[in-house]
Amino acid sequence: MATASCAPATNTPVEPTTPYAQLIDLIKQADLLGSTVSLLGWDQETMMPNQGLAFRSEQLAQLARLHHDQVTSPRIGEQLEACEADRALMADPRSVAAVNVRETRREYERATKLPADLVAELAKTTSLARHEWAEARRDSDFARFLPWLEKIVALTRRKAECFGWAPGGEPWDALAEDYEPSCTAAEVQSVFAPLRDRLGALISDLTASSTKPTNDFNERTLPIEQQERFVRFVSEQIGFDYSRGRLDRSTHPFCSGTHCHDVRLTTRFRDDNVLDALGSTMHESGHGIYEQGLPAEHIGTPMGRYISLGIHESQSRMWENQVGRSRAFWQWCHPKLAEYFGPAVGSFTLDEVYGAANIVRPDFIRVEADEATYNMHVMIRFEIERVLMTGELAPADLPGEWNAKYKEYLGLDVPDDRRGCLQDVHWSMGSIGYFPTYTLGNLYAAQFFDKALEDVPDLYQQFARGEFGALKTWLIENVHRHGRRYRAAELCEHVTGKPLTADPLMRHLERKLRPMYGL
Ligand code: ZN
Image (cartoon, rainbow, N blue to C red):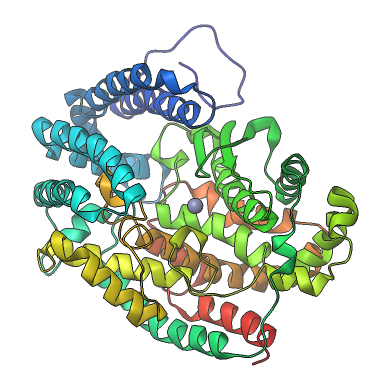
């Protein structure tokens, strides 16, 4: 079978003999199917004509069934048991084999714990609910979405019960395991609580200040073809390898990794917001650089897979924020603006562009939020989904709770549910436990970046010269090459020597934003 290895191809396939070799063979076969699903998903968002949707849904459903059969095959269970009994194989818990066995066991247990009728009901309900949500959002009609949300909450609570959670834990923990393995609501809360207080104080100081950067640069209309050439150039400069990837357009930017040698990014353009296109391209490039940095020889196994969504997000946010919103980056990038856009951008100074990239302004929509207020949007959703899962909050009371929290956290009066609790697709898809990974990503990014700066003290001077290779190398060495060897929290301790805290992110925001706002 095809593997990612660069070793010379052999024409005589060797039948795997040991249980471990058989296990690897089985999970790589499942991954061939899984990665094909993801490629069809990419095609659906970028290339597929609208009329192709019905047939594509059938293709995807068929592949999903086959994939589920493969990952829940009793043969995997048998090989896992044989591997786990092999003490020599499992002796070093950080060895490639032990990691692959441990993680395959975790995934196998989860996949086989859900009854088939619940899987089918969830799939059917969420595909219908997603459509209903889109209509409800368009009309700002929460009542239309409510019965669907009630069904989804009931089904996901059943799902959480099937998985179970540790003593002292809660249903949310069981659901988050799909996105952030081993991460509990209590742990998230212990990092989010101090972040919330400090961030709240910073945001109100910035909003109250009479000195503010101007957004004029970002309101300039610039042709989309020129924007596309520009963002492609930047993403290549920071290290996304176009011989192993592509950049296309989609409504919602994403990165879809089917293999480290075939990574698909998308971005979006608006003619009056070049910094949005740049930010989302650098963000997705960060995801793509992670996918391309995974060890080729382990692709198709847990050792060749990203750790968690939080760690994935740390990679995208670092390139978007720690790099792309730094003054050093703009020292290099500011002259490029004239090269790519000509006189249309000629009069803006370095500090005007740098300022426009760092404006902080509380607003209603999460996906349009700035680097600081973004985390408040996430914390609100985390608190709400937690109590939706315990039953303390009834779905019918969601808009009231949502609006109260926006008032409390961001000082905003939400005008309607379209700009309120109907804005995100996640809950309509049954993705509960997902939101915190965005802020965990910001926290991990800041803590990793501090360590990278300690190891490579002239990183900023390098950025100012347009050199980004040292940071990419640092990330490959410290994060990418490990695949799933560590859990997210373990990796953080291993790399930075400390557990995850809010300090590095707050330091990063305070040091940059206060001076820009004359504080
Ligand atoms: Zn992302």
